[in-house]
Length: 343
Ligand SMILES: Nc1ncnc2c1ncn2[C@@H]1O[C@H](COP(=O)(O)OP(=O)(O)OP(=O)(O)O)[C@@H](O)[C@H]1O
Ligand SMILES: [Mg+2]
Image (cartoon, rainbow, N blue to C red; front, top):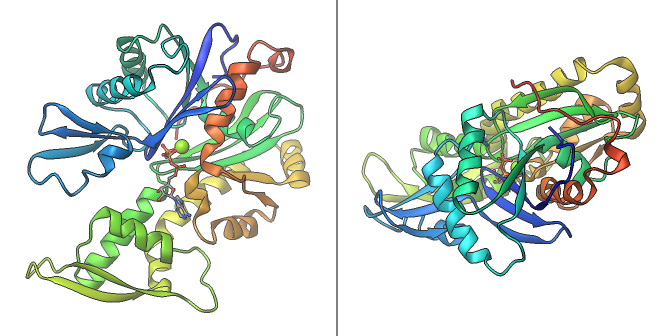
């Protein structure tokens, strides 16, 4: 839902599975940190955001590091509240931080997930909460005019979830939630190293292997790299050399789900709207959209130009900032995008 009026909203919140971003009405990003919380086993918060990431794999038995969201959904209200509280403390001094907040919703949140976010924000002093469709924000943040009559298509490939949709005249014409993103590729790399090479690596290492090797389109000269891990049978450290062709095969099932999701949206797009998109191409947003070769493969699949914004992971926050400024203006008179119906 694109809220009907601006009211007194001061900040936009993009709760991402990997990173949380807070933006003010001028488009200044005042918070951009990992959506992580480090707690001493079940009790005090030790760190939030990027500082919590430092505790991953280091706190021994004593410190647990949790994500605030699972697959794009803030399921644990206690964790969310602890995260927001610590974030607010660090943001004190940033204007009317406790005023009204516009929250981008990028995944199919249940009513109770929304209630949890509303309550968590209220508990840290936010007086008013409104909701915005995260995909509409991504489109607007990437420079698309979704309020105009001409149809626009956007896909946001995130960490824990993805979504593609078509907007025109401020309305959502077709969309699809896809419950995977870049983190599922990291999991696939971790599983591949375990089953094919009998080494267990921390998520941080699997992520580094993903960024270096995982590709949708295999290059002419595939890369190789050495990876250190632990042999689960003996507990000994071991190093193996792995290659890009196999890494590409490991992530293929995830890529196929993204491709199918986009195909489904296009199949449900009315012909006139499809014609508009064919004229101009479509936008691939989200940091997961940076996956090597993904834009090329989707360009081939759709036979349409693909535009990748210069900061694909910042477009939801950028769109929220535009919404904060622009809500209530004539531009949005025609209609307001509604939240997608779910998978
Ligand atoms: N250059 C890159 N190549 C491949 N993957 C990348 C690259 N840069 C970031 N990623 C991946 O993108 C994902 C993060 O995307 P993004 O920041 O859009 O997610 P998010 O907004 O936190 O989560 P979500 O929107 O799913 O709730 C991570 O899985 C990360 O590993
Ligand atoms: Mg996101």
